[in-house]
Length: 139
Length: 139
DNA sequence: CTGTATCCACTAAGATACTG
DNA sequence: CAGTATCTTAGTGGATACAG
Image (tube, rainbow over all chains, first blue to last red; front, side):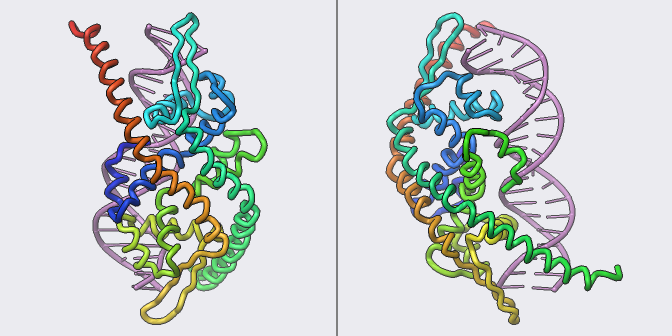
């Protein structure tokens, strides 16, 4: 979501910046959730807000602006009273769903393994901590 | 990288937390780059550091610890002098490369479109800004 | 060589209040 | 309804120094 000042010079090799930069946008937590919500069709501001449930106005506005800037969503404003603004995925945005979906699938499929690994890791850490205490016990 | 306190209750529908949580880990900038570097095979600490080029010791250590905790990389320590520590992707980590790759491909393929969209957006913003100045001119 | 610990700057994000 | 503005806080990340 930030400018490309700090992120870009982080890596110089080849076209890796492309991934980094792109991931910085679409890998963002709120971005993913908003795109996910919008997947179902065009939505209004407060509809998205309710769908995502937990996002603040600020973050929703920023996220939508970023997505619009990158041509991933289309913003249509009806200057009626009360005002009405629709957001919908562009072609580009819809294409993004594909890799996002595969990431989603990976997450769903391998989350048990990750949780198990974390359990196991925690146990190893406890044993290591115990070994430490026996050294530092006196103090 | 944070705990699941703020993130989880953000969405309530189905198993969406899985994505959120997982994305928080693997969508991280450094995580992606480290996994990418490790893709080529087992590497030592400073090898990774040089490969990623731009990562600080702190972030590399934190990233590796997170990856190890989630069972994505394997850490092998040889208590020799000087010490030597190898990191390599686990099976789980190698599987992660697949969706990551599709995201990478998406980034490479559609980055031009995104950049173009950003250009176009900037122009629209400039016009809007000009309209503003004519209103606020006096002040 | 492979880390850990401390300090510091920055900014991202939430809460709140206000505008068109 | 759809935002914008501002304040405050918590976390991220870098630099440096030091330890095993």
